[in-house]
Length: 230
Image 1 (spheres, one colour):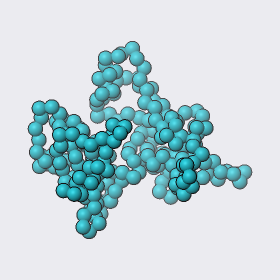
Image 2 (spheres, helix red, strand yellow):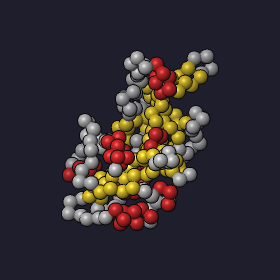
Image 3 (cartoon, one colour):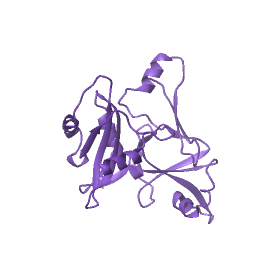
Image 4 (cartoon, one colour):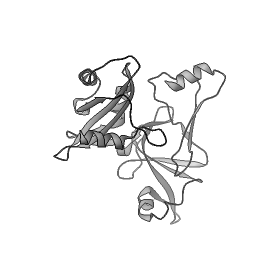
């Protein structure tokens, strides 16, 4: 919604979506040809010419066209490794064997993507944001997206905590737009019309503000602690 507003106010400016984890720097681009709708997912676009991207399944096999998998990136700006942490470095790299007996080294981004019909990468969420709750796999980012579509909700953070049986409980912390009023039950009822029953948040809390990290992002770890201690 912020991008749409900005593009409407600066019609002569070219806007681009550029993606890249710190471990490989920037590696994809998407140039906007028109103003997107607020509920339209913004593509990551195409991998740059000096980089290579693969989409892998859980067994490190290439997925079929249009299927979801983890994006791995090989780039001239890829890091050599994490400082004094060889174990983490090894876990973070995917080695593609070549016919010459060497390996191409890719960084595992942890981001789930798929190629759309135009051959553009679509971001679908974090691999570590997928949990199993009530016997089903749930993409927490999908739940967040549904909540943010509500006309009265300003911000939403969805995460999970463990109960006494070590089961994942889906939680949602929300802030409302100015002069709007909602109760938790109304939000749950809204989710019932949008989500599968197993993806509906079991704990919902409306807050005046959400905790932030030093970089300004929503601090889900703090929220987890607050919900666990409640």
